[in-house]
Image (tube, rainbow, N blue to C red; front, side, top):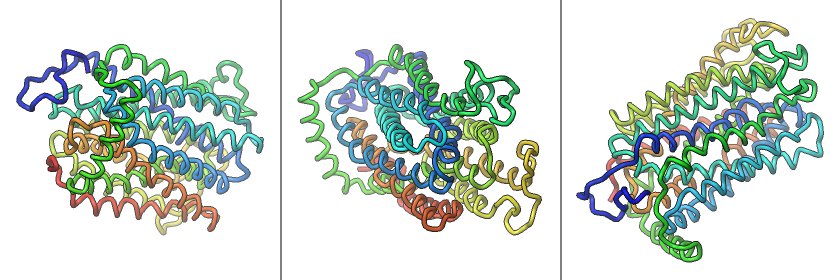
Length: 466
């Protein structure tokens, strides 16, 4: 960090100073800058568009998208610990965020070229998606590693929760921008707010859906600037070549030492499992709704706005509960809510809620007018309420139990455990969906991830591991 901040090697009794509020705000705005990628690209706009209009059919599109998600997740898993170790050795975080942020911007902007029904573009689109995913995930690793020197330990939960909540607000606004002013129904030619799309975007070729890619890239560039300008970085330690050698040496020591830290190792294993389930749930929730109810961009986007609002409140309140009750309790409670939501989703189809027959959605009917659609909407809100606290509390629990002088390494391992099997969730969903030609069967595998993660979490001690 800046010279005014005590070095990480200082003894625990040394006085600590922390950056100013603008510096902390700059860090928080990273979540605001990055969240539209997850909101617009992976969940509510581009992924459903790809599945519905670019791929031959929804089941095939879901499986292809899953394979691309799996491939990027495997790359992230293999490289994250190494990059984290090198970052700890070099000291700097911002150059890494800039490098991988550039990959996010490039990959996102390339999605504009994904015209409907053009099979030649499918592979390039999936490559662009994988590139952008690698960029946003690696940039997040190094942004997370800046947290311990921003606020006192007793406020870490609040900082993490506020970051997630702020990110969700950014996601909501970006989604409203797309739905209200850019993406129009091909039938009416009007946006959700009844406007003709800005910039002459053509509804027939889904330019309003495709513009979500470049918008994501521009949004990131604009709103990540306060972090670079206001938030102090760690001081440089070693030059690049020496940092690589030292980082790899320290990583080997960390991996040898990890079995002694049983609680920390168990938490990383639990995080590996339940994060895989959560990422898969977010990645395929919008796709599943599109295939189940036939929702168009306006409908799925409106669902996304409502879900993101619920997630904002969940993350904000969860951060306070984290400091008050502890990260472990917040994580466990979030997983229980997610299990309830998944079970409910699997018991809903257009004409049934659980085992009760209901009136199915009518063509041209009002938004979310059918009972099954409303039930899915409520369950989506429950996922949002639980998902934010789960992610925010997970990174604060790591900060509380990991050695502070190797925090980027452990965030690299955190990313590793969040990604090393991240290809398994999408791969299982994709494979089961392809084999059964049933989206519901594919989604059912997610129950396993949350049950196993919850079981492992019970063995984690929330105090520092020695």
